[in-house]
Length: 572
Image (tube, rainbow, N blue to C red):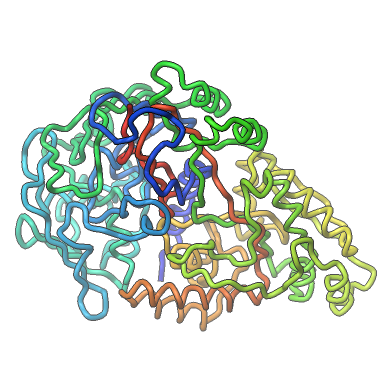
């Protein structure tokens, strides 16, 4: 059972990471080339890659970063036990070894995981990387002053729930053993077949104890990756990375490390980023963005220019936008009312409100449309692309509302395509055809998040969204539908307050599986079972479009993070 405080911390951090990830792209070009840019398309070493981002790379400490699959900029500096396979599309959803020789060796019930480090691993100063360094890196992530990272370990490691980090508890975590300099063993509270996914998080990056200076470590963290930090101004607004000469490609099959220098410039306006990438003048010709999407108007302009259109990475991040119900609030306590709304929704109008089919795909499943999540096509309330108002009216009558009803839909006033007023208005218009009058309640974004994530204030009917920390059904379904994750005094994400023993038991059973393909099938079946209860109405899965400079080569965008992988990029 997860600790409520852990879930509150995890998802609060996740919401931040998703803001950064939203607008990313997966299923990139299959030929790994920036088509239309002219000249030699073969990736070469050398040059400077510029990264133009909206969000600063703050808190550049492996304990504090919330990244999945090794992230993007962090992945250039911090290696972890495992990482994501650096390939396009679905192939990029697989876990592969990084510092370790394999993805982990579990005992029979997946409560003990053992890793062996590769030989010849070194930090930027030439000193060897040891298993004790990884243990220490994990332990310091428990320190309150270094909070912000993914806190699964507090929940998963045996006896770790109350651990406060090595600054207060010198004994360390007994759940992590290092019998020798290359072996590390993890003892878990319960079976976790997806531990190899967790081992991709930056908390698994090695930290030499003698170089740890607490909260100041982010100013110059010791690199285990192909690049080291030589400048970090204004907490990540401007970061300059140079080659780590002690990194060896012989120990790292995933990172290409083509450029000599990575120049990260953040805190920029999204329209300015897209203008600079479009123009590709000077250093911007060798520039990319990892957090800025093309909007509908920008996309229309780009689509009409063959040269620009050839410089757009396209794809999907594992993410779902949906309507959420609180079944303790009338009239949503009646399943037929929830079903009526599911039938009444016009997904074509919702997609248009989200920017059109180029930026959104209609969804009838909660799990994203990717094999790694266990996606199983289903639609428990089939109403076609434009909804079925007649069926909705019938269900309302059966629920005792033959003359219709009035409800309030809560949404954020933030101008994004997740919970925006435009999406809310599209839902309002569709439900009107079924005799449901919808009053819109728009809240400022902070108030919106505080309101919908508190059991005490959660409205009956609101817009929501969710993305997974790694490409599996587990981190997608469990936080939203596991009854043991209902948080009554903190940030709650089980909006339907579902506490079904059969669902909880199935989550536990799937977590025991180390065969991820078998687990995926069962996540898909569980998604369908839950979907029939109409606790949520999936609306759409986002599609992402991002520009890159004319001198950029070797574009790789996976289904794991959906972010253009700068560890693969070369510049002309």
